[in-house]
Image (cartoon, rainbow, N blue to C red; front, side, top):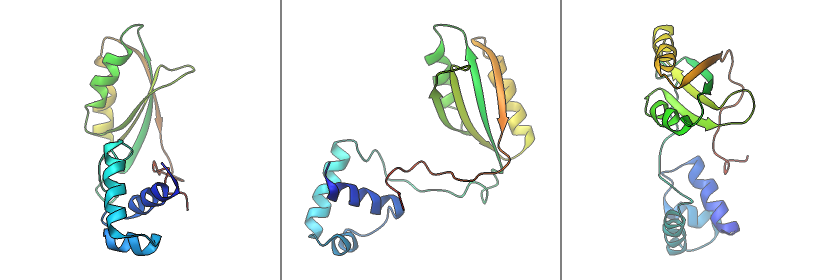
Length: 148
């Protein structure tokens, strides 16, 4: 991956629908070069998919919570796989420290949050769940190429 690939990723991260012609003009290369580079980035799995960035709050998902999970030995991957399939879950991480896994999820209301907490605690491999409720989001951007 070179500087041109990085610039293409940066442009696509800001606007995934940007026409190749416009990218080519901004980057002063041919449209064919952009086409070939994007195809190569997809083949290399540097671009895994083209997607959108939804406004979760506008969609009614006003509650964000993080969950630190302590999981019985030998069942970490199994629990993470189950939890990752829940629609409200945005991220599941293996971590170091006091917890074995960290889960980030968004909910429309306390009832949904409560249901999810009870689901976590119903999993026999989960020894303990610690819930962290987000009061205010200062920054939420998982896009490393968007460095402006």
